[in-house]
Length: 236
Image 1 (tube, rainbow, N blue to C red):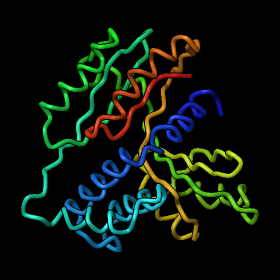
Image 2 (cartoon, rainbow, N blue to C red; image 1 turned 60 degrees about the vertical axis):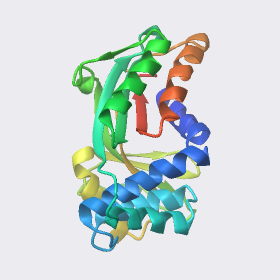
Image 3 (spheres, rainbow, N blue to C red; image 1 turned 30 degrees about the horizontal axis):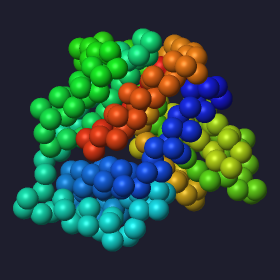
Image 4 (tube, rainbow, N blue to C red; image 1 turned 45 degrees about the vertical axis):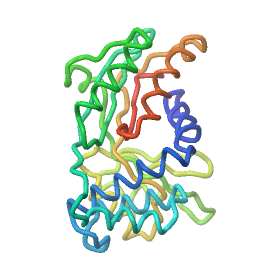
């Protein structure tokens, strides 16, 4: 699977395990989905996915319901999805996805994190072609699963590959096939623990352990920011 995949998984286990940080981010995703497509998950696929992701992280039911209700409130924040791109320590490339109600605050914070490690933001779009955007679905593996049969079932829905990580199955497809893959998995009766659009580097780069210490400082700062929803790098 490669170091990049292992790094992303380890990073999620380490950082997304911080409940004080993950719940607000998950709640924001639920609120945005509910405001965009309505509060009924049965008719709002984006909300259904956001709720499934929250449940996968053990977010309490009350928190989920509160996030949905916030979307209908008169004072509900207007969130803007915006990306920032930059170069960090040792030339690492960093793609930052944000959801914010104050873009001025967000860009100032993100820029400060890069500046503190002698990094810099670059014009949006400069790094876009260096990452492939993929639909990624995480499913708990069971003894009854037939991976080959699953591949055959999902090819027409846009499957590119299935990664078997022992206890977990990762289904990958082009980001444009997110909806069709989600529907196919649901039709097959497979419970998706997490579904997301992720960015994978086209030319991963290996960094030494010493360099990773510096890079981690930047990533930690970014992922601790409430406006930051996801961080991607070109780490191999």
